[in-house]
Image (cartoon, helix red, strand yellow):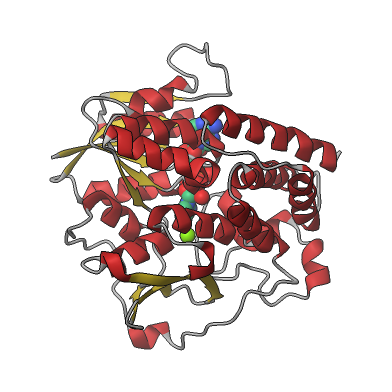
Length: 371
Ligand code: NDP
Ligand code: MG
């Protein structure tokens, strides 16, 4: 029986994780749960799972009794926890990723922002603490599944992207897209921040950076192709030219389960069974640079390295929050990130203080750009 902490249990990935664990009760015990602000859902989860620890981070007040950002660290390092599912959204997830890896836990990482902001520090924490990083992101899970037994010969990755709701829209119309239109994702049902990231393709840039750190590949060996059906999650090419892919109807429950059980598989009846005839034609097309400026900005930040990815991430978080608050139009998300990255002088990201300062600076700069 392995102990699991679910950070962000009230969100989309958190709730999917609990759905998986409900079917796998004989193998896992829920030891800790944390929520951001949804106290009532956390309470009903606490009644169902009876965890050793349940904590609400709350509205950023570290002195709140039983709350505050320390909640994430407490859950992530709880002695009875073997696996930390980090399903917090955004930069708020970084400290828990680092703490869990330093404490020797397996981190089932949905919070890709941790790795984007501080990839080198996250890998170092895993090395030093003996922790293990396993992706929840479906594309990266697909890569891990394809690599099983072939590790050393990885030549090239091709991550797929659905293309989001605006894939076929004229570029001018996308600039004025509404919040409702951006949240209407064609193939995946997700939290609002990642849904907007999927509409701008910022999400795919974050995933390219995530893949770079997870699989140690240079950026020119990580490619992205638009695949509107979201059936093929990634392609992996080996040194001999052979290509493997992992397929399935879109569901996060399979990659979540695999992150818990890797390198073995557990039987699970809850995942929709694949049917190639029902899946129909699988099509692939290039990323439209005119539509997805944010994607190019993010990949360029990844290539620049150092603090640039943290700056990209922070500017993106600030701009997406402003768009969701209806303070800026959709097209200003890319403009804002572009301006913030242009104003940034990249520093090495080998100390957490430098990453935090880059994150703070980029948010403040993004607010100036948007005012
Ligand atoms: P949601 O917005 O649905 O959930 C976010 C979770 O984080 C909620 O439990 C929320 O709590 C909690 N939270 C929010 N802010 C804070 C904070 N400051 N401190 C602590 N907890 C906080 O997002 P998703 O589940 O969609 O995504 C979570 C992560 O997983 C993201 O990094 C995303 O990129 C990644 N991911 C998501 C996928 C998906 O299909 N949804 C696929 C692949 C990756 P509350 O609701 O109580 O406020
Ligand atoms: Mg993904």
